[in-house]
Image 1 (cartoon, rainbow, N blue to C red):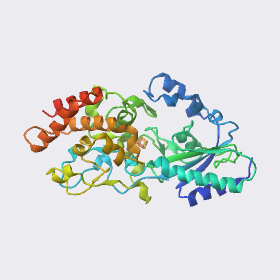
Image 2 (spheres, protein in one colour):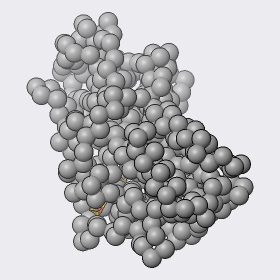
Image 3 (cartoon, rainbow, N blue to C red):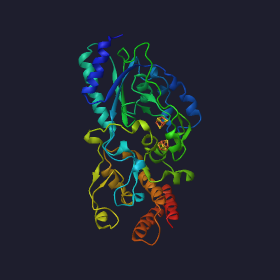
Image 4 (cartoon, helix red, strand yellow):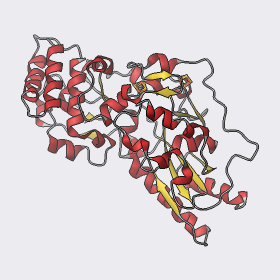
Length: 378
Ligand code: SF4
Ligand code: SF4
């Protein structure tokens, strides 16, 4: 095994590349990974078939000759209100959609990947013998959260996310898998950071779709993040009203977490909310503010009116593109249906016209979502 000085050097190097925290862990089958088959067998992964990749259950299978993983943590928190306190002044915020905090800026895959690749380059300069090292952000056959816990970066909370006592949970994780035999950040007799959830159950109680089967176990099929991003078909009827105004992801189980109350603010410009230019339609609208639309609480009417080509153009390099145009419009329909909009206003007429057009489209999911929305704003 390589000397501890190498591990300390890697951690320092990661921080100099902009990571907030970094840890090194041995590639082992940690206890959380052993519970995966049962979680999958219960169907909790829904349509996310990639989660059943057998390599994810044991880091030893993730890469030939793997010995260690280096985990980098990058804060994405921005100085905007939490979803549970969100409202734009002087506006009807029920007519605005919630996009998850992590998706307001540029695609984090690119931002993290660039830093991880730079770290791999540094490894190549320091360790001259032959070795393999591959950087992954979400795309790897590993569970970054579990590796991060055993690298000493935090504990896995009842909301199933990695929590850090100083940073909360608004951060991204990326990993480098390597054949280098690095000394782990935690010493042989050191345990990962303790679970500080205690008797708290705010996240479990606040989840609008009751996605937690029990503390630490989520049925992803009920999670708004899954429904709005991963699910390609129709949103199950019983989960539509609890979705509220969510159009891409959900932050509620993080927003209510006491460990995020003092979460530090990231200054990385790429994570600030994207601002889009006004469209002709918005400029002539009386219901939308005379300011540019941004991904922080975007107007639902604006989203609903986006064409597929506009979506592709506006969301290039944004995490939101994962939902695809069809998914985002479907979600906007559901959010409009939940908005409390009532007949008798110009807004209602305009939005109903847009929904009618979608209801007449050849796409069954969009048509049915639009009809559902129309029936809920009568
Ligand atoms: S992200 Fe939202 S829907 Fe999903 S578990 Fe958390 S609170 Fe529930
Ligand atoms: S809200 Fe409470 S129970 Fe949930 S993750 Fe945070 S500290 Fe743990």
